[in-house]
Length: 255
Image 1 (cartoon, rainbow, N blue to C red):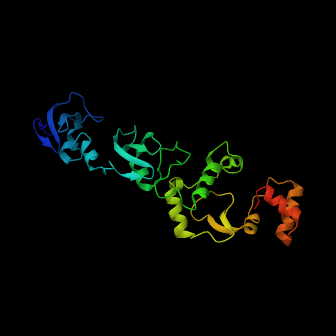
Image 2: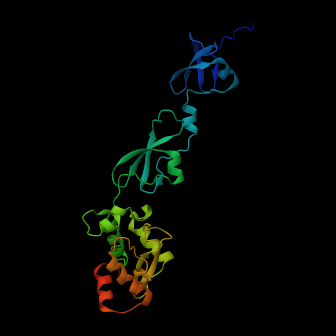
Image 3: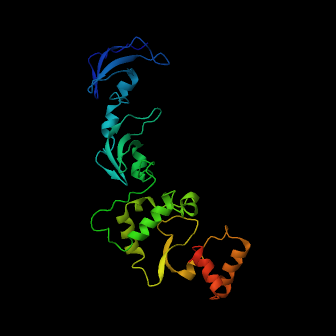
Protein backbone atom coordinates (compact mmCIF):
# COMPACT_ATOMS: atom_id res chain seq x y z
CA UNK A 1 0.00 0.00 0.00
CA UNK A 2 1.44 3.38 -0.98
CA UNK A 3 1.92 6.00 1.69
CA UNK A 4 -0.43 8.96 1.75
CA UNK A 5 1.42 12.18 0.94
CA UNK A 6 0.59 15.12 3.16
CA UNK A 7 -0.13 17.95 0.74
CA UNK A 8 -1.09 20.60 3.29
CA UNK A 9 0.73 23.83 2.50
CA UNK A 10 1.62 22.75 -1.03
CA UNK A 11 0.71 24.97 -3.94
CA UNK A 12 -0.69 23.70 -7.24
CA UNK A 13 -1.22 26.50 -9.73
CA UNK A 14 -3.51 28.97 -7.99
CA UNK A 15 -4.52 26.46 -5.33
CA UNK A 16 -3.09 26.28 -1.79
CA UNK A 17 -3.90 23.05 0.09
CA UNK A 18 -5.44 23.83 3.49
CA UNK A 19 -6.42 20.43 4.85
CA UNK A 20 -7.53 16.94 3.93
CA UNK A 21 -11.21 16.58 3.09
CA UNK A 22 -13.03 14.11 5.33
CA UNK A 23 -15.09 13.06 2.32
CA UNK A 24 -13.67 10.82 -0.39
CA UNK A 25 -14.15 10.68 -4.13
CA UNK A 26 -16.51 8.27 -5.85
CA UNK A 27 -13.93 5.44 -5.79
CA UNK A 28 -12.50 6.29 -2.40
CA UNK A 29 -9.88 8.73 -3.71
CA UNK A 30 -8.34 11.19 -1.29
CA UNK A 31 -9.52 14.78 -1.62
CA UNK A 32 -7.95 17.99 -0.34
CA UNK A 33 -9.61 21.26 0.59
CA UNK A 34 -7.85 24.04 -1.28
CA UNK A 35 -8.07 27.81 -1.28
CA UNK A 36 -7.72 29.52 -4.63
CA UNK A 37 -5.92 32.84 -5.09
CA UNK A 38 -9.28 34.37 -5.98
CA UNK A 39 -10.53 33.51 -2.46
CA UNK A 40 -12.77 30.55 -3.36
CA UNK A 41 -12.46 27.31 -1.41
CA UNK A 42 -12.98 23.99 -3.18
CA UNK A 43 -12.37 20.26 -2.70
CA UNK A 44 -10.02 18.64 -5.23
CA UNK A 45 -8.97 15.05 -5.89
CA UNK A 46 -5.34 14.36 -4.95
CA UNK A 47 -4.67 12.86 -8.40
CA UNK A 48 -5.94 16.01 -10.09
CA UNK A 49 -3.56 18.13 -8.02
CA UNK A 50 -0.65 15.81 -8.68
CA UNK A 51 -1.16 15.62 -12.45
CA UNK A 52 -1.97 19.32 -12.87
CA UNK A 53 -5.48 18.60 -14.14
CA UNK A 54 -6.90 21.06 -11.62
CA UNK A 55 -4.97 24.30 -11.10
CA UNK A 56 -7.70 26.65 -9.88
CA UNK A 57 -11.25 26.72 -8.59
CA UNK A 58 -12.33 27.38 -12.17
CA UNK A 59 -11.45 31.06 -12.31
CA UNK A 60 -8.37 30.30 -14.40
CA UNK A 61 -10.68 29.26 -17.22
CA UNK A 62 -12.49 32.56 -16.79
CA UNK A 63 -9.22 34.48 -17.14
CA UNK A 64 -8.40 32.59 -20.35
CA UNK A 65 -11.82 33.35 -21.88
CA UNK A 66 -11.87 35.90 -24.69
CA UNK A 67 -12.66 39.26 -23.14
CA UNK A 68 -15.72 40.58 -24.97
CA UNK A 69 -16.29 43.67 -22.81
CA UNK A 70 -16.77 46.72 -25.01
CA UNK A 71 -17.19 44.71 -28.21
CA UNK A 72 -20.15 45.48 -30.48
CA UNK A 73 -22.09 42.82 -32.40
CA UNK A 74 -24.89 44.22 -34.55
CA UNK A 75 -27.16 46.08 -32.14
CA UNK A 76 -25.45 44.60 -29.07
CA UNK A 77 -22.70 46.11 -26.93
CA UNK A 78 -21.08 43.82 -24.35
CA UNK A 79 -21.21 45.34 -20.86
CA UNK A 80 -19.63 42.60 -18.76
CA UNK A 81 -19.30 38.93 -17.87
CA UNK A 82 -22.45 37.15 -16.72
CA UNK A 83 -22.89 34.04 -14.62
CA UNK A 84 -22.55 30.84 -16.64
CA UNK A 85 -25.76 28.99 -17.36
CA UNK A 86 -26.22 25.70 -15.52
CA UNK A 87 -24.86 22.66 -17.31
CA UNK A 88 -22.53 24.58 -19.63
CA UNK A 89 -18.95 25.81 -19.54
CA UNK A 90 -19.47 28.44 -22.24
CA UNK A 91 -18.87 32.06 -21.31
CA UNK A 92 -21.97 34.26 -21.11
CA UNK A 93 -22.02 38.04 -21.41
CA UNK A 94 -24.39 40.80 -20.37
CA UNK A 95 -25.22 42.81 -23.49
CA UNK A 96 -27.02 46.10 -24.05
CA UNK A 97 -29.21 46.36 -27.16
CA UNK A 98 -29.81 49.56 -29.12
CA UNK A 99 -33.50 49.30 -28.20
CA UNK A 100 -32.61 49.77 -24.53
CA UNK A 101 -33.02 46.17 -23.34
CA UNK A 102 -30.33 44.03 -21.69
CA UNK A 103 -29.82 40.34 -22.35
CA UNK A 104 -27.34 37.61 -21.34
CA UNK A 105 -25.91 35.91 -24.44
CA UNK A 106 -23.43 33.11 -25.11
CA UNK A 107 -20.06 34.39 -26.37
CA UNK A 108 -20.02 31.90 -29.25
CA UNK A 109 -23.39 33.18 -30.46
CA UNK A 110 -22.03 36.72 -30.50
CA UNK A 111 -18.85 35.87 -32.41
CA UNK A 112 -20.62 33.65 -34.96
CA UNK A 113 -23.15 36.34 -35.76
CA UNK A 114 -26.06 34.22 -34.56
CA UNK A 115 -27.02 36.93 -32.04
CA UNK A 116 -27.11 40.53 -33.26
CA UNK A 117 -29.92 41.92 -31.12
CA UNK A 118 -31.89 41.16 -27.98
CA UNK A 119 -34.48 39.44 -30.17
CA UNK A 120 -37.33 41.58 -28.91
CA UNK A 121 -36.75 44.82 -30.81
CA UNK A 122 -38.61 43.64 -33.91
CA UNK A 123 -39.32 47.07 -35.33
CA UNK A 124 -36.36 49.09 -36.63
CA UNK A 125 -35.73 52.53 -35.23
CA UNK A 126 -36.88 55.38 -37.46
CA UNK A 127 -34.20 57.68 -36.04
CA UNK A 128 -31.56 58.65 -38.59
CA UNK A 129 -28.12 60.02 -37.94
CA UNK A 130 -27.43 63.45 -39.40
CA UNK A 131 -26.64 63.50 -43.10
CA UNK A 132 -29.01 60.71 -44.16
CA UNK A 133 -32.46 62.22 -43.68
CA UNK A 134 -32.44 63.61 -47.22
CA UNK A 135 -31.15 60.41 -48.83
CA UNK A 136 -33.23 59.51 -51.91
CA UNK A 137 -33.83 56.00 -50.50
CA UNK A 138 -35.24 57.24 -47.19
CA UNK A 139 -38.86 57.01 -48.36
CA UNK A 140 -38.22 53.51 -49.75
CA UNK A 141 -36.68 52.35 -46.46
CA UNK A 142 -39.39 53.86 -44.25
CA UNK A 143 -42.11 52.34 -46.46
CA UNK A 144 -40.52 48.89 -46.09
CA UNK A 145 -40.39 49.34 -42.32
CA UNK A 146 -44.04 50.39 -42.21
CA UNK A 147 -45.40 47.50 -44.28
CA UNK A 148 -43.25 44.91 -42.49
CA UNK A 149 -43.59 46.03 -38.86
CA UNK A 150 -46.50 48.42 -38.41
CA UNK A 151 -49.66 46.38 -37.83
CA UNK A 152 -51.76 49.47 -38.52
CA UNK A 153 -50.31 49.87 -42.01
CA UNK A 154 -52.83 48.81 -44.69
CA UNK A 155 -50.15 46.71 -46.43
CA UNK A 156 -49.03 44.88 -43.26
CA UNK A 157 -51.31 41.89 -43.94
CA UNK A 158 -49.50 41.30 -47.26
CA UNK A 159 -45.99 41.68 -45.83
CA UNK A 160 -45.26 41.60 -42.11
CA UNK A 161 -48.15 39.29 -41.28
CA UNK A 162 -46.83 36.81 -43.88
CA UNK A 163 -43.36 36.84 -42.33
CA UNK A 164 -41.70 39.22 -44.79
CA UNK A 165 -39.10 41.19 -42.86
CA UNK A 166 -36.25 43.63 -43.40
CA UNK A 167 -32.72 42.20 -43.14
CA UNK A 168 -31.58 42.84 -39.56
CA UNK A 169 -28.43 44.81 -40.44
CA UNK A 170 -30.64 47.14 -42.47
CA UNK A 171 -32.65 48.09 -39.40
CA UNK A 172 -29.95 50.75 -39.26
CA UNK A 173 -30.96 52.78 -42.34
CA UNK A 174 -27.42 53.88 -43.20
CA UNK A 175 -26.48 50.22 -43.74
CA UNK A 176 -29.37 49.81 -46.14
CA UNK A 177 -28.42 52.96 -48.06
CA UNK A 178 -24.78 51.92 -48.37
CA UNK A 179 -25.64 48.41 -49.56
CA UNK A 180 -28.05 49.74 -52.17
CA UNK A 181 -25.60 52.35 -53.45
CA UNK A 182 -22.77 49.78 -53.64
CA UNK A 183 -24.65 46.80 -55.06
CA UNK A 184 -27.59 48.15 -57.08
CA UNK A 185 -26.48 51.68 -57.85
CA UNK A 186 -28.78 54.65 -58.53
CA UNK A 187 -32.42 53.99 -59.31
CA UNK A 188 -32.95 53.74 -63.11
CA UNK A 189 -35.62 55.88 -64.72
CA UNK A 190 -39.06 54.26 -64.44
CA UNK A 191 -37.96 51.60 -61.97
CA UNK A 192 -38.60 50.86 -58.30
CA UNK A 193 -37.34 48.33 -55.79
CA UNK A 194 -38.50 44.74 -56.34
CA UNK A 195 -38.00 41.49 -54.43
CA UNK A 196 -36.79 38.76 -56.79
CA UNK A 197 -38.37 36.02 -54.66
CA UNK A 198 -41.74 37.49 -53.71
CA UNK A 199 -41.98 35.11 -50.77
CA UNK A 200 -38.59 36.20 -49.40
CA UNK A 201 -37.68 39.23 -47.34
CA UNK A 202 -35.92 42.48 -48.06
CA UNK A 203 -32.41 41.07 -47.87
CA UNK A 204 -29.11 40.90 -49.80
CA UNK A 205 -29.44 38.89 -53.00
CA UNK A 206 -33.22 39.32 -53.18
CA UNK A 207 -33.48 42.92 -54.40
CA UNK A 208 -33.27 44.55 -57.80
CA UNK A 209 -34.44 47.61 -59.68
CA UNK A 210 -37.36 46.64 -61.93
CA UNK A 211 -39.90 48.40 -64.16
CA UNK A 212 -43.65 48.08 -63.55
CA UNK A 213 -44.23 45.33 -66.10
CA UNK A 214 -41.46 43.18 -64.61
CA UNK A 215 -43.00 43.65 -61.19
CA UNK A 216 -46.47 42.73 -62.44
CA UNK A 217 -45.05 39.46 -63.74
CA UNK A 218 -43.45 38.83 -60.37
CA UNK A 219 -46.47 39.25 -58.10
CA UNK A 220 -48.09 36.68 -55.84
CA UNK A 221 -51.38 35.65 -57.44
CA UNK A 222 -52.66 33.21 -54.81
CA UNK A 223 -55.14 35.71 -53.33
CA UNK A 224 -56.74 36.76 -56.64
CA UNK A 225 -60.19 35.70 -57.76
CA UNK A 226 -60.51 33.69 -60.97
CA UNK A 227 -61.62 36.81 -62.90
CA UNK A 228 -58.78 38.90 -61.52
CA UNK A 229 -56.29 36.15 -62.27
CA UNK A 230 -57.54 36.07 -65.87
CA UNK A 231 -57.02 39.79 -66.27
CA UNK A 232 -53.45 39.57 -64.98
CA UNK A 233 -52.62 36.61 -67.18
CA UNK A 234 -53.99 38.48 -70.18
CA UNK A 235 -51.52 41.26 -69.45
CA UNK A 236 -48.70 38.81 -68.91
CA UNK A 237 -49.24 36.77 -72.07
CA UNK A 238 -50.21 39.49 -74.52
CA UNK A 239 -49.03 42.68 -72.79
CA UNK A 240 -52.31 44.22 -73.93
CA UNK A 241 -52.51 47.88 -73.00
CA UNK A 242 -56.22 47.75 -72.21
CA UNK A 243 -57.76 50.24 -69.71
CA UNK A 244 -59.46 47.38 -67.83
CA UNK A 245 -56.20 45.56 -67.22
CA UNK A 246 -54.33 48.77 -66.42
CA UNK A 247 -56.94 49.89 -63.87
CA UNK A 248 -57.00 46.48 -62.18
CA UNK A 249 -53.27 46.11 -61.74
CA UNK A 250 -52.85 49.74 -60.64
CA UNK A 251 -55.76 49.82 -58.19
CA UNK A 252 -54.79 46.50 -56.65
CA UNK A 253 -51.19 47.54 -56.23
CA UNK A 254 -49.77 45.25 -58.87
CA UNK A 255 -47.86 48.09 -60.52
